[in-house]
Length: 70
Image 1 (cartoon, rainbow, N blue to C red):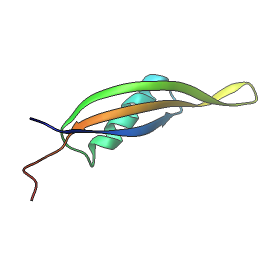
Image 2: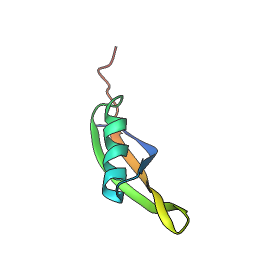
Image 3: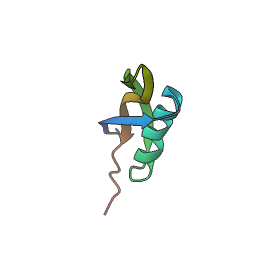
C-alpha cells in the first residue's frame, strides 16, 4: 500500500501558462522525490497597463511518501 501527499504550488512566468506550470513542477522536483501527478487548479494573470505581466498557474502536485526513509 502506498501513501501520497498533495502540495498546492503556484508557478509564475513572464512567458506563458505552459511555462508557469513547468516552473511549478521543476521547482518542486528540486526538493520532492516521487512526484506522480500534477493537477492544474486554476490559471490567472497579473495585468499592468492592459498588458499581461505574469502568467500564474495554481497547481496541486501529488507525490508518494517514502516509507523507506531513515
